[in-house]
Length: 177
Image (cartoon, rainbow, N blue to C red; front, top):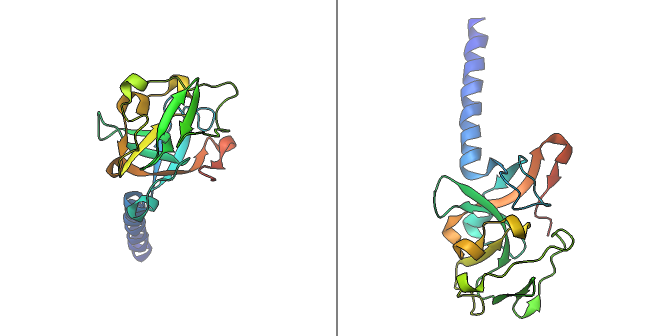
């Protein structure tokens, strides 16, 4: 009996240690708060953020990413990468243009338009600098995104959304590009 209790305690401690390592280096659970990524992600859904990709790679246009807020390093925001380093970006008549071409955004709700914030975005036409990304929420009318806070530096990225796991009825892979 005593031997099995010690074995259980060892297994439990090893499990906790491995869980900590996984959360630290591989993946992390986050809860979606708000509707800025609707209809792709909904309020109160829980996702796994995959943290390995950006250790050696960079975000790609169209990926749903998680990054540290500029206001509070303990708060994470989730948005979609719209423009990457070297891209030009413009909003005209509710449409997003990247490198002079309208961006195909089939993930937006029907009839959704992107309100321009050119006065807040001096980088709207010049190429985005190296290691800086422009991000927008899929629910453009309800999103606090690059139109408000500017470009996101690469070092702020935690990872990319990988899977919605809660509630069980909404389990799905994310970032199927």
